[in-house]
Image 1 (tube, one colour):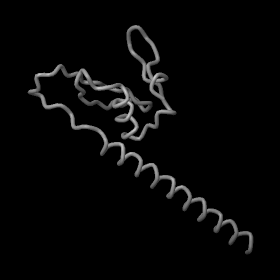
Image 2 (cartoon, helix red, strand yellow):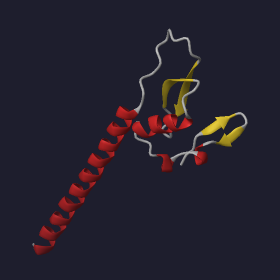
Image 3 (spheres, one colour):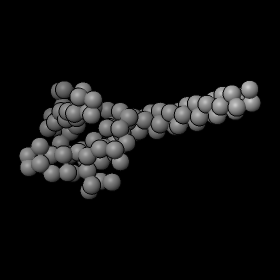
Image 4 (cartoon, helix red, strand yellow):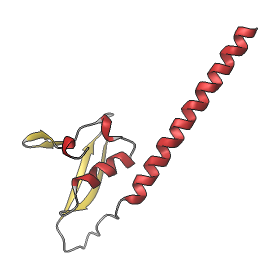
Length: 104
C-alpha cells in the first residue's frame, strides 16, 4: 500500500514537472513570435523571399522575409514554431552548407 502511494506521488510529481516545462516552452515560443516583425505585404517594392523549412516530421512551415532581413530572424521564426536552435541545422541547398553555426 505504501509503495503504491509513493509510486502515485512520484508519477504526479513527474507530471507536474512535465507540465511546468511545457508551460515554459510555450511562453518562450509566444515571446519569440511577438518579437518577429510582420511579414512583408505582397505589394511591397522591396525584394521578398518566401522561405520554406522542412521539419523532422516531414511537414513544412513557411514565411516571407524581405531581402535585408538577417538570418537570425529566420532562426527566431523557427524557434517560435517550437524548434529550439540547439535541435536543428539550417542548410543552404546549393552549395550545401550549414549556415546555423554562425548565428548561435
